Length: 300
Ligand SMILES: [Zn+2]
Image 1 (tube, rainbow, N blue to C red):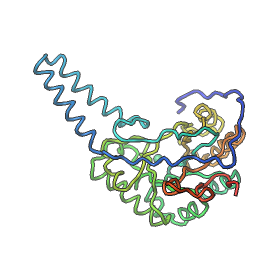
Image 2 (image 1 turned 180 degrees about the vertical axis):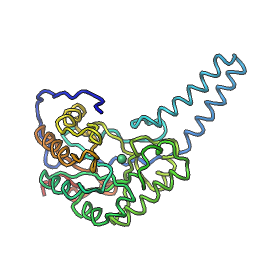
Image 3 (image 1 turned 45 degrees about the vertical axis):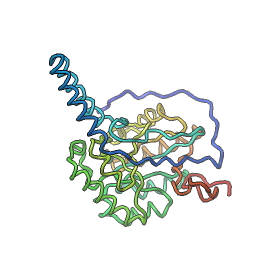
Image 4 (image 1 turned 30 degrees about the vertical axis):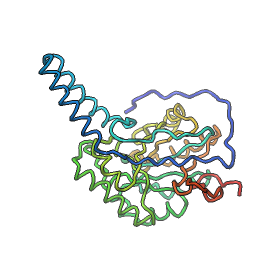
């Protein structure tokens, strides 16, 4: 199903990034995961008080409006209402953060070779049970210098948005354990399944120091099989610091060709695919040559 028309963007002036350009450290795990509950309770009590005082023609819309707002914040991947989320990174040069969801899959080895050929680094948001089934692919992703993110344990795409607190925590905790053990370090990024994060996600992310990541450029490639169409959609969101959303193992079987076309377009437009700095590397006395995680080699 095609949700949007594909268009081809025009040519742009290109300023290539300097060889030492990096994406900054941007971790921001939730700090007050229960704040929404207090605000929500206050909105409902406030709506009730307004209803009693001024009549339910005023009170009911306030109560329902707060509920609708919470529902919208759950379904809208870029919403910061319920917890912090990265949508785009602060960058002035043509650097992007490539993120690839839903692996590991049959596509993973070809994707790794493709990324190597383009001197690109990516964050693979992996599904815990798929990683358990193919541990060698997880290790290979890490060995090639890419990053691994948490994308839930079983990827319940129909119900993730509605999971209750205990089930939500189990999805995130279990994936974190599996991926951390296989990759040798725990993930620092989390992507909600289909991007929808309900109010219980933040409480599960905080103890694991996980930052939720959305995106600013997407091509609906999980369903769209035409590389040119995906590229045209992604190109509309390309800016310095863009977070690009891609998938692997899509049912249409064209994920590798799509990533290849996106990498080609990024290269043509002068963008480099790099990973955000480590928080540790960004601390007071950074070592410039050790600070870069991924991307084209630093000047050293
Ligand atoms: Zn997914």
